[in-house]
Length: 266
Image 1: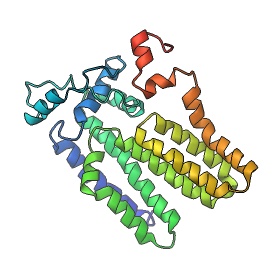
Image 2 (image 1 turned 30 degrees about the horizontal axis):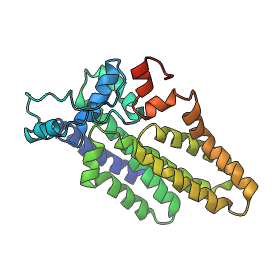
Image 3 (image 1 turned 60 degrees about the vertical axis):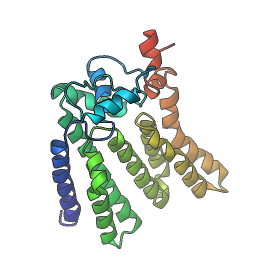
Image 4 (image 1 turned 180 degrees about the vertical axis):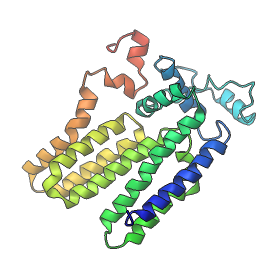
């Protein structure tokens, strides 16, 4: 317990300050919040978001922002994030329903996901430089208290979940490189997380080439082993991509087939 006391203090400070951001920041004053909120609202209403012509109405958006989101400007037409993969929004939907559509509740869930990012950053630094604990503490402090990052983690957007998955993948890559006896198990977990990342945000897609380079670095010249490692790592995201064909794809590109054709198969 004493060994982890610095991390616990950092997390407590992060949650305290983040909750202040979540509660005190005026509604919709974080980037793209109305569009992210409306994605969850559509799911809560039993409708599947579809990106349509006119969803990004820049003139109306600028007018609403210029009015500082005055009550006479409804936010319901702001739906330009409907193209996003759905995982973050599906996680938000139960809380949205239980809280009666509370924006603060959505922000607090994002804040909790961000706490995982802080903890994973700390763990990665400890694993990389185990003899220099100050590096791990400093890393956690930077991730937790960088003002703009803290503000983003305390707002309604899918960045928190995307960062959590990226941080988990980086930590597992480090652990895998140091524990070859557990390579297959860790690669399967990394593949699963990468698949979840595909269902979260395009930012996570960047981890695919990072993982590919790591595999080549570890397996270069041992081709049979490299093929086994690649299969273990790529099988889970391949299942996400191909399971049911048009079942996953609508989630990835805005639920298009299901919403427009009334079926998961266009």
